[in-house]
Length: 225
Image: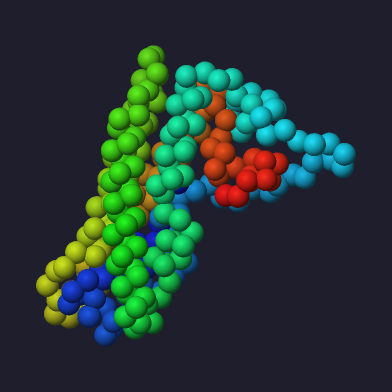
């Protein structure tokens, strides 16, 4: 939920034209501030002759066999929402590639950024209305913080593509891009803290990891990511 702002200009109106004329302002194209999913984990293949069952295993974080408690059910609904509304692999590809002064790529970027921002807004709204079981105030606070993060992400995308006056100099353009980069870096750090909160809560309430981001679950269930 689980990014790449620092490598993109605000791509609309005259600012976009300034960007195309002067080239990319940031050289590090490997940065991906919007990719907040779990890092790839090694998949342990089952022993020959043993058929794994994704619904069985030890209880707690990392297991697919957690007891069906109200908190477990809440986290599963939460995970499903994020899987449905977070940026897709195609979205991330379009939003992180170079423009190469290609107008069609710029149009695709603007359209994709607009759709992603809307999805983040929708996700934030749905999270705020996702009822938390009684006695789980920590989960409620986490839900609200995650919704705030989604709204902040949407705002950055919206700012990137909104019309604005043309930058008069390359220095002015770079200053505008630096502001967006700094906002993205703050959200990147916030995302790391939210991931730590997520893990701690799953351990405390004995909730399995998000199956949509769990490589082992994907392997043994035969379901695509």
